[in-house]
Length: 113
Image (cartoon, rainbow, N blue to C red; front, side):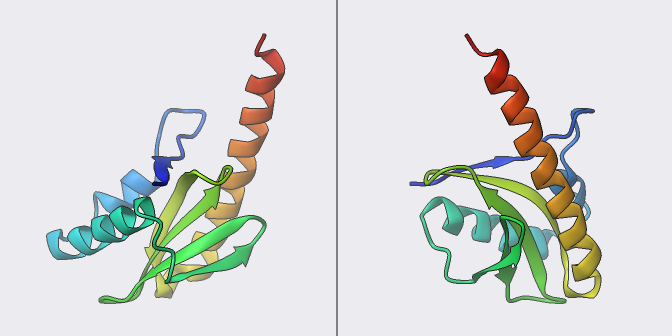
């Protein structure tokens, strides 16, 4: 089983939650189902978009995408979400969030006794 967590920025906000909360109920259910499938290890609709970031495609409506990075074999960090229309800017945001996550994790590990 894969643990799926949301990326939280230094201000305590989740870009994924901000996006998810704007979805209509049917789209939100489809995206939530995709997250559940990720937790079950189903990555059949996933492709790399570079920089350690992956895109889970939800084949529904305008083409929803969930962006995440893998932190080891059993942890996925959800970085952002979006649609095909804004794919390039969503990928750029996800890559920026992934770099921030890794940088902050390194800093925390450095201070860990």
